[in-house]
Image (tube, rainbow over the protein chains, first blue to last red):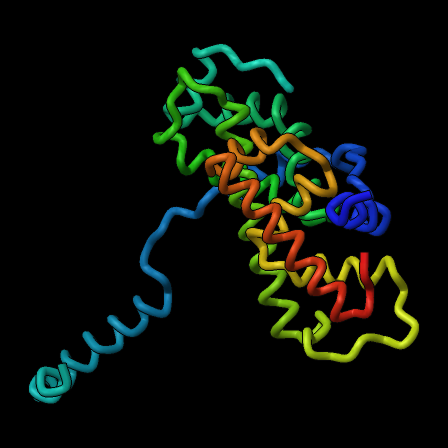
Length: 70
Length: 177
């Protein structure tokens, strides 16, 4: 017996070929549930934009500070 | 192998019809799942990879040529998704320390089956996939080459490298096949 054959036998004795008994459940609902969510503005981004807009409305001088940091 | 679906169904799938996707899923799921199971060797993981594969197919439907074999295209996507799963599992095992360190000394009384499994899991994913399909499942090189989108010569070379690497890993665990 060649080295390759003995390696193959050892491998197959430890890790036998897989027997497929089929899925335990219907997997179509899992596909449907992965339907992508339409992308939009995340809430955190909206909150930051709103906070900056409010801050600038109340304290217009902050615009220069903001411009300096951008 | 499942027969090829009618071209109308494939055209509807390419246009994004989800009913067509469901029909194709119901027709090909068992075959594709069986292929994935041979690679990932875990029933739960095979189901996750199956779902991922069909989603990848749906997202990439515009690239599918309806005059070509849907089964072969799906198998290629499933093979890539399985490869990604093996890579992720390998990263997780390294991060969590579940996998055995290659430099760790072999157990004095190793359980042969477990040691062979450990050596197998230590293979890089692209070698593990060809070892699983060629050495364990004994699939023809041509079939593996088509699923991996590689020339047959490359598959043969990878099988040879996987065998050499397995021998080395087994030797480090005190096993000589």
